[in-house]
Structure formats: structure tokens, C-alpha cells
Image (cartoon, rainbow, N blue to C red; front, side, top):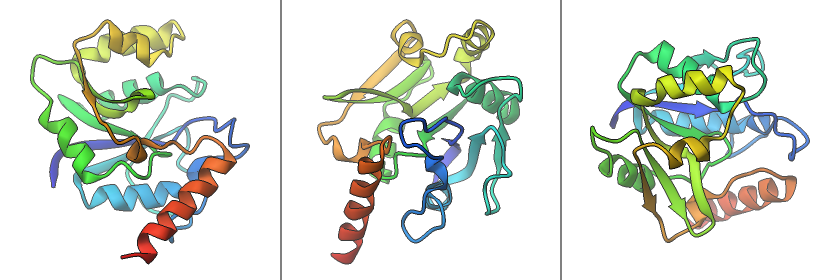
Length: 196
């Protein structure tokens, strides 16, 4: 198991999906969030869900709540997570990335070193700021960004000591942002499991 906390980000607006994607059924679970939490709990010693409210979930988990006065923003999740966990670093994954596997995670962890601020997955389609490791050295910047309502993770990473790890295969990094992507992911997951 990976001996660092994993924070699953599930507090977004899901505006393109038209409904809260973290609550959509997936992989035999009543919600994508529960699927991800159970899957990641087999890989990490501690898994937490970053969200605005825990009330919407119908399963037991470790939750880290965003400040109530902040709109939907990952920066709020990062500040709350660092404040709650008081750790040197943690792994982050977006709730809508159900195919990021153990091999991808291990590759990112192996690329980490103490002199870095972050280690982030990158594919031909671009960087994936919510798939990677963040160090507490960025907490001051996250606080500033939150205060200034600046939520551009890409900009922060571009001016920090970030190692971008290139992956040739785009498939594990599929995001479920729109209804057709959710349907495609369901089909892909079901096909993969029926062939095993």
C-alpha cells in the first residue's frame, strides 16, 4: 500500500454533467464517489474525500469539508486538506477519473523528491492537475489564491517546482465531464470487467 494520504476531490459543480457526477452510479456502487473511495482504500493507507458537504453521500468515509463561505474551488479543498492532515504531502485524484490505476499512481510517486512542490500527470491532451502529488510547500500559495479567488491550478504549477510526468496512454486519464463521457466510461468499465 502507498503510505501517504490520498485526497479524492468531489466538491465540484458538475455544471457540464447537469447533475452531481460524484453521485452517479458506477462499477456496481451507488455512486462514483463510493466506487473511487473503496478502490483507492485498497491502494492507500488513508483516503479522504474533499467536498463541500458530507450529507449528500450515503456511505461511511473520511471527509474533509471545504470552508462554507467559499464557492466551488479546488483551492479551498487544498487548504482544508493540508490544514486537516498536517502532512508533508498527499496524493490527489478527481472523483471523475475512475481509470487512474495503481501503475499510474506508482509512476507519479516514484518521480517525487523532497525538493519538489508537485508531481503531476501529463498526456498529449495536456496536464492533469488533479492527478498527482502536492507538497505542503505550496500551502502559502494556496492560501493566497483562495483569498484572491484565483483558482488557476495550471498557473500555480507552471511557476512552482513541478515535475510533469508524461504518460503515452491517454485512457487512464479520461474525465467524466459530460453525459456522453459518463456513458462511455460505464461501457468501458463493464466491457473490461466482462472480459476478465
